[in-house]
Length: 324
Ligand code: ADP
Image 1 (cartoon, rainbow, N blue to C red):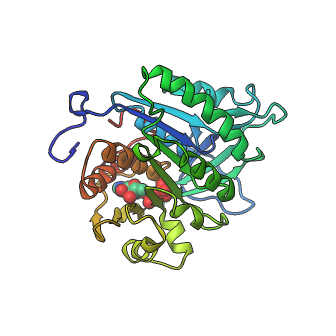
Image 2 (spheres, rainbow, N blue to C red):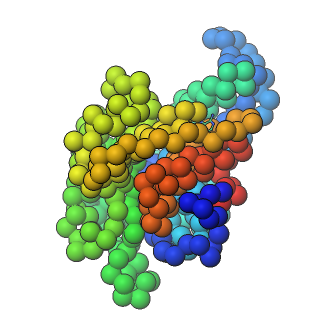
C-alpha cells in the first residue's frame, strides 16, 4: 500500500502515537441477506456475524495495527458485566479501556442490527442505545487520571496524547471537553479531531471551530443540502480554524480534503476494488488513515489518498483485521 512512495511497515514509522478516542461502543449483529426483506415478511440470512462496533472504537482498531501506536477508548458504557463482549474485543486489539465510565445500573450494552442486502449492497442499520452520554465532569475525571498515568508512562514527556478524536455526539458536553483540553500547556502539540456524521444531532456545528481536523460524512453534507463534497467543504471552511484540515468522504466516489491554511481543495478517488464485501466502518477506517498520515508528516493530499486506499481495502474484506 502506498504511503507517498513507501509502504506501511514498522521501519517507516518515525513518530510513536498515543491516540485517545471518545465515542460509544456497540454490540453489532450483521445479517447478510440476498435482498432487503419486505415489511412483515420472513427471510433467512446467508450469514450472521457479531462484532464490536461504534465509530471511535473502529478507528482505534485500525490505528492499533500501525506500529508504535497505543489506543485509549473513552465512553460511557453499560455495567462491566453487560459490556463484557465489547471489553474483551478491545483487549484483543490492545486498546486500553481504563478511560471508560461504567454505569452499573445499565444492564444492556448499546446494540446495532445491520442488514446487508447483497443485490444492492445496501447497509441498513437499526440501533438502540439507552446509556446516558458521557458528561464533561466524567470526562474530566477520567482524562486527568489518564494524563497522570501516561505522563509517568512516557518518562516525563509531558504529552499524554498525540491525538484526541471525538465522535460528534452530545455537542454541548464535547465542546466543554475540547475547551478543557485547551487549558493544558501541551495542547498546541496535540491534535484534536471531530467527526460530524449525523445531521440530526443538534449543535454539532459548534465543534467545527474547535478542532484541528474535521471529518464530515456524506450523510452530514447531504443533510445540509449539498450533493458535492468540494462545494460543501468550501462553505464549511470559514467556520473552522484557519489552520484546520477538513475531510469529507463520499462512499464509492472517494473523498475530498480542504486545507484551510492554503485554501486548496484535494480530491482522491476510491480504491477500485473487484468486489465490495463489507463497508461497515469504511468512514472510521478513513479517519484512522488520516490520523496516522498527518502524524507521520504526510501532505494533506498524500494523506487523503492514503486514507482512501486504507478505507478501500477495508471495503474489500470483512472486518478490520490485517488492514496494515
Ligand atoms: P461511511 O462508512 O462513514 O458511510 P463512506 O461510505 O463515505 O463512509 O466511505 C468512506 C471511504 O471508504 C470513502 O471515502 C472511500 O475511500 C471508501 N469507500 C467506501 N465505499 C467504497 C467502495 N464501494 N469502493 C471503494 N472504496 C470505498
